[in-house]
Length: 264
Image (tube, rainbow, N blue to C red):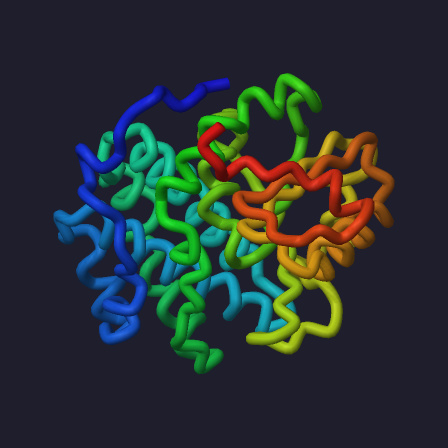
């Protein structure tokens, strides 16, 4: 495990503000073109998550993914692990990871996004300024000592990508299972994960595994309850849940969702 050190992010990045709206005014092709040349680490972070959210949504909307698309998605996640880890360690952006895992795949990423006509990112990771995600990372090791090291991370897509990628870095895990249940913006009637044609997926990641579900926000709790129900269908050995922020007072099982995004 690689805990985050106690640092002042503002000394490196200044006061946080919403870069997301700025990116919505940029063509997605220009985001891809400029990401490896942009010097502002916050803007690179926003560009990366815009591409990641849009690419994941495009794969979900396609209904099934090819082995090549699955490989690109795994590379995108490895880039996210490195970018997020370096950002929250006050090291700016890991451009080696950008150039190794992301840049070679940009053509495939843009083709998939434009092929589904899905050109607007939700920028859910911007709802909580980066200090909340930093506190999530700082509090995560103590939570892990309490529950035990997970075998599988499940990210509630797409808002939980950033804390999930940070958890990958801290826990030294190279994979994450995103599950999307976007009832409002995407009209999902049930939780959805990538269909790679493997009948054992995602069972092999969940069955008899210690699973940690990560979300960015728990409000009504309906999304978390449905994803928890889906994961339980695969008989995990242990199932725990955490979130950056929690607003709901709904009774169990949501009282088991640990809020980690506050400065305790």
